[in-house]
Length: 196
Image (tube, rainbow, N blue to C red; front, side):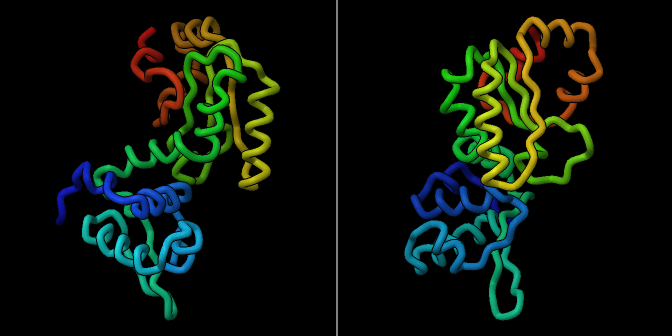
C-alpha cells in the first residue's frame, strides 16, 4: 500500500478543490461530471487528479450502472487532518471563525467530529460548543443560516469560561460527555481547554 505524504494534498488547485468537495460531505459518492461541475475545472484535469488521488490511496472508485463513482477513503492516513482543515475553511466552521469578532469574546469553539463527518447522531449529542462571552443572537443567526442551507438541525451549547471551568472541575456529566467525544477545534487550543 502507498505511503501518505504531506505533498499528497499540497499539490494543485484542482486537487485542493476536489478534497474540499469530497470532505464537505465525506459519506457522499460523486461521479466525474458532478466533480467537474462543482469544481468548475476542465474534465480532463479532474480525471487526471482523480487518478493521482486514487494512486495515493486518497479516493476509491466504484462502478454503478455505467458510471464510475468516487469517494474519499476514511482509511487514508491524513483523513482526520484534512477533515479538520475542510471543517475550518467551509460552512459552519468557516462562519464561526470568520465572524469571531461579531460573536463576542470567544475563548474556545469546537465542532464534534461526528457532526463534521456526517455520522448519525444519538439523541442529545452536541454539535457545536462555544465558550466565552458569547453574543447569543449572532451565534443563533449563523446556525440558522447553516441549518436552512443544509436542511439539518444543529445542536449547540454556549457558556462562559467561568461556567465551563466550574463544571469541568466538578466533573459535570454534560461537560464530561461533550469532552469524551472527538472534536475539531475552531478557536483556541484543545490542550489549554481541558487542562485549565
